[in-house]
Length: 538
Image (cartoon, rainbow, N blue to C red; front, top):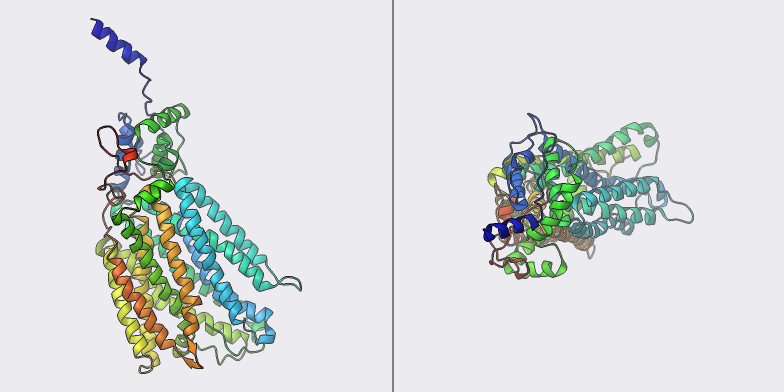
């Protein structure tokens, strides 16, 4: 009898268990998975079950909505990056008439590299903050930075006291910071809310907006040229022109509500405040997922497997962007072979028209088809297969292009250029964006993606700012040797690809390193570790 009394007393003294509250929402189109698991008291298990439902959910409008939200941001990023060629042409015509309407080479390079320099800062900074503060807060902040910098750039103008090139460089560095933040966040947000079966296609569709942004920039240039045809036709000619609520906030109730809100089409969950506080306190005691910290970061990447994975994603992106951005330096010669050379332009209108049409042809011939073939095949062929195949084919193309440069016709060079554009995008340009958004643990997914993306931008700076200067040496062209250098970078990309795993049709939980021993700080008394889970909130 005394044993029963002591048991009852212990039960009475135990803190009340915070019950999950039934929530409104959900219909035939958007099932409310949260209410299916109200009977589960363990927050780890309730969370696991809710995530499992998202992983196996059939493709629906909420997936389309996630792609649109992330894709719109990436579309604007791409437009802002690739419209710089039009910007520099216009700046030369308006502000440098004494130089035959051409922007000085140093100013042209500085404006183009300014965005890449800012992007490196944004990728590292926002990638780190997204893992520590939360995806949604940082996503909104980087969009504000992009909007503010774009408006400032559009309103900038020169004066006797302020140099227009300096102003544009300032705004494009700031713009690059915002764009850099969008790289890891767009990838991570899409991957964490995607169904496992179609995660590759969803992330690919977001990245494919880069091609749409390039296309839109070319169309805007064409429409502006046509709209001011009369005025531009009267202008003198131009000689030439170069072409994580859960893992960050430990807020289970809010995280679970956000899963339900995502599935039902609302912006965020509205949990019961009392239940939210009770579950948050319980989570601090029950959940064993480590929080992001510098010590844990270095401990995680001190494991050889993890270090090689980061080397594989960052190295592949670096090697790709050296050639991807550097090859655009050949646009002038390519445009000449297809009959849209700007060297024979009779006036400003003729110059801008030929430039815009030539850019449209280049984008439509190779870049855009490559993006969407990738979207269609990422979840069947696999990311690693596409990346490996792309690097191999690009190596062959650049070897042929470089070593036979002086022995093949202009049309053959055009064919190689179009094929290179296609296999850049149906290859490593697509997969280097997707893989880092899948393979890293939640607490460092955004930071690691930012490191990988920043490595790529450093590669683009080298491709544009260092290797580009080798095009002409001792008053002779070295373009063939530059192409041979790019072939070497593509060859090295084959070996860095060996360091990344195949991720198709695997959940983020499978890919987050759960097979590794957990750090001693988060192993319980029984020696059991916890599983890494993704946050349910933007």
